Length: 168
Image (cartoon, rainbow, N blue to C red; front, side, top):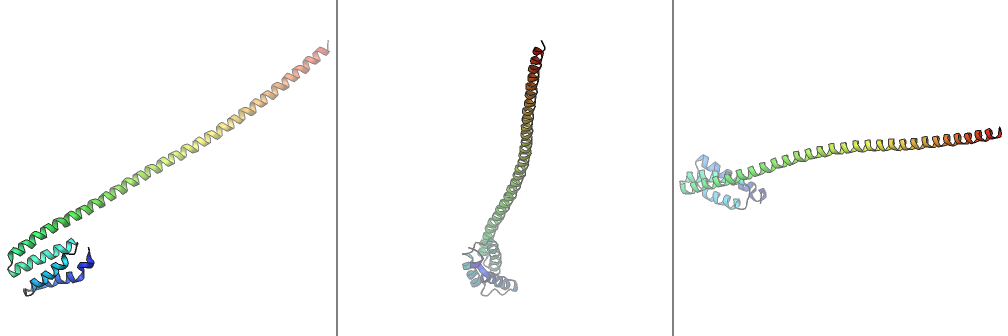
């Protein structure tokens, strides 16, 4: 539920009970405790419940109501245990979050390195493809030159043969 229900009224009540107990004037303490307990029932704030139980135990002991003081101390122990469990749970959740964040950062770094490796491989493949295309074009050009030269040699050979026949 939260601090809006408990609010400053509940804290002020606990402060007043605590002040009465420490000053030794316990008259009216029981009514203040009942009023604070009524507000406390609607609150989920464990640290305020612990404070209330601690003050209530001291107040009941000062009033000579030792069974109620003992019950308040037992309740304090139970609330303390829930509070510690809640804190531990939050700490573990935070630690899990940090570990998950670290794992995700490592995954991101690995993916970044893989992406860089893929980009490098792609650039090398493109360069290789350009070189291969240039080689094919160069080979085609060389073949055309060779064919041209062969055709010229063949024509020259035919011309020479024709000239040689006319000489006889």
